[in-house]
Image 1 (cartoon, one colour):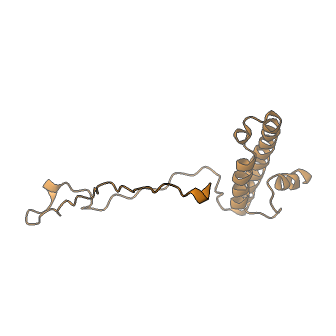
Image 2 (cartoon, one colour):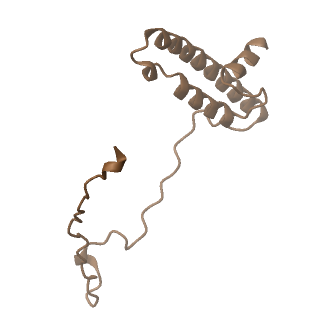
Image 3 (cartoon, one colour):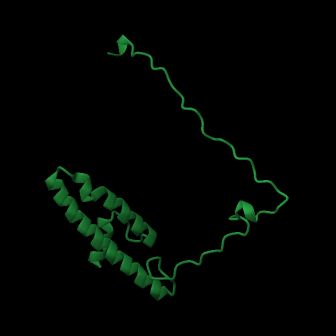
Length: 130
């Protein structure tokens, strides 16, 4: 049980955090400790790699713990494998080409939305700014 408490501390969370909070905490902390943020600082980059390993371990443990709790409670976990959601068919009439439209109606007029570029005249910087 001490490891689980340590994992919550690594992710900077309370022990009763929901799976969504655990995931968000993981994302936040990986952003803070990602080694690519410390390019040019070898000591900090090495520390960040170690912290990232801890974060990955904590997230994996807490994620599997929450998935196991979800199965015990009889509900599906966000992280468990499930089939993708069903896609709805496109609404009829939205993707008709101009030749498929009713013959009595005209197509809406095309509007030219391109505008000429705007040119600004820059004033020389005043001497008092120097």
